[in-house]
Length: 83
Image (cartoon, rainbow, N blue to C red; front, side, top):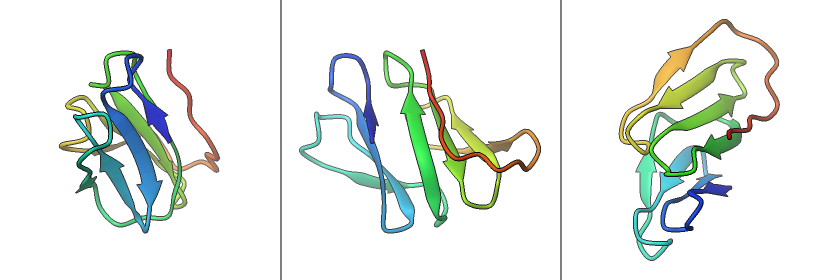
């Protein structure tokens, strides 16, 4: 789980999906494709997200998780972090 710096945009991985919220966790939305997600990280404002999946790829979103794109080459990524 991760969140924007002010806590209004939490992001979590559960049940094969990435779940995002724009209201401090009151309402959650499933995003992305079903995967075995390893880790997720957020920028301070919550708009840029990166996630590591069990398939070895990193996925990134520039719109708070509305859309996701696979990035880089397959590695054995276990976790991600963001400044």
